[in-house]
Figure 1 (cartoon, rainbow, N blue to C red):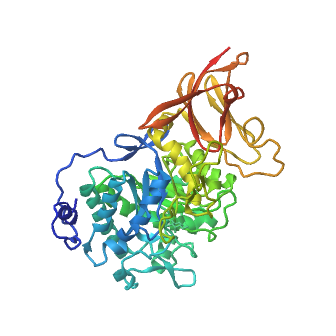
Figure 2: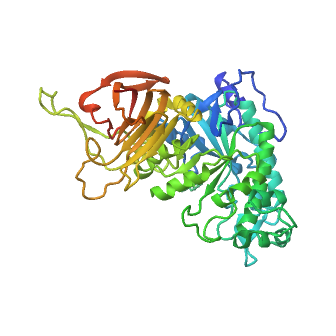
Figure 3: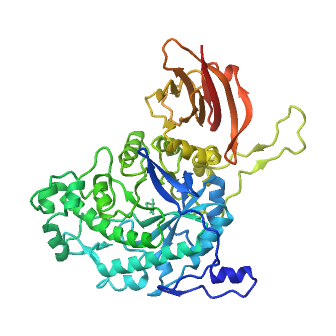
Length: 565
Ligand code: DGJ
């Protein structure tokens, strides 16, 4: 609680927003501390530990200019509608250090306090030196002095709309501001409302593959650091410069090293005062047919330079893809590229529409620690829209007469947000189980891909067969025209013969791997999760299970016990 909040809770007059000079520790009343969130790895799998146990971030990212107290009323109703458990929202360097050397964390405190009131965790996005490759969130007094806080120089010798990763004056100030921010979080948030922090936003450069200033050029011609050569699988030996080591990739590799080194120092300084999980997000290059250097943002943690980021910025726990592709092949390839032995999968930005929402399950199938569509707040609308209006019959309906029906509303934000809400409604209440089962290697999940009618998941003595699109219980069998794939399924092994099944628009069946045996459902329970516990609704049998478990368009959760005969 800061002075303003304390004053408010005591009913005192409002204070001027608290300003602190760097280095002054925030005064906090003692509060029972929860464990600091952390990313852990065991048996080759990762988990984001929150309150000491695995956590699955069901996220939603607010629009870029929504991190202001006056905008938060447009944010919380969306988070509630979505059933998100984590809000990703920016913290602006230009806001917290509007006056050089003075930091004001009152907006951060407001966001955290309101998140607590809404029982939502936070992923705070440090919009510092870089935002989408530019320096637009540097404080005004820095932007006004480009000679001191200089931009990088492009191939034509002109300053680009991108900060130079070799500008130590900017770097020192970013380190100072970010460290103050992390120190403040440590003092203000023993509850660990903030569970992870993004350092910068899509760092790197559009329109230039590197800095061509004389100082940068000198480094480009100098030997590549040995750890970079090693990380990129190049043989150790005589010193070699960037061009000779990497050929056509030399410039983007050099820029990745320069940007990662800068961001890595900012991250390390912040982590030294408060060891929250940190990540960097990437504007991607095409995962299947990557264009030549220059066709994508250079410098950020794109898939080709993840090893460079790992060695140049070890304080960053996760290199994370912002995925704005809709086709299954590209989307799944990105997930595969960022799900690495040295990198947990986390999707901090993606589109939120119907086409993409099923890939949430694909991400879960690769042990993602979180998933967060972008731009899910009501800031772009005049006000949070009410639920679709209901047309009431003139008089109370008689037996057999139509009941009240929702009016057909024009597609609105709720419709855009609905696919994400559907996912989170079903997974939200079982989030801790899903995260734990994934960490233990007991969970698999998949999404429908056009042209692939079935997928098989292997669980020791059982195979789970997921089928889509046609036939008995799937979408209409005779659909001659292609339909958009929407199916998704999650299967987790609770014990040898018991499974948790969740998903929609598909059929899930099981086959024993013993060839001469047949599956029988001993008991197939439909239920809901409440407070983390499966709550029985009914036993499914007959038409509902004779040919497998039919998952309809609205996601459901089932607990299934199997036997053989
Ligand atoms: C990616 C950026 O990281 C976000 O901050 C936002 O600008 C989106 N693009 C907009 O699509």
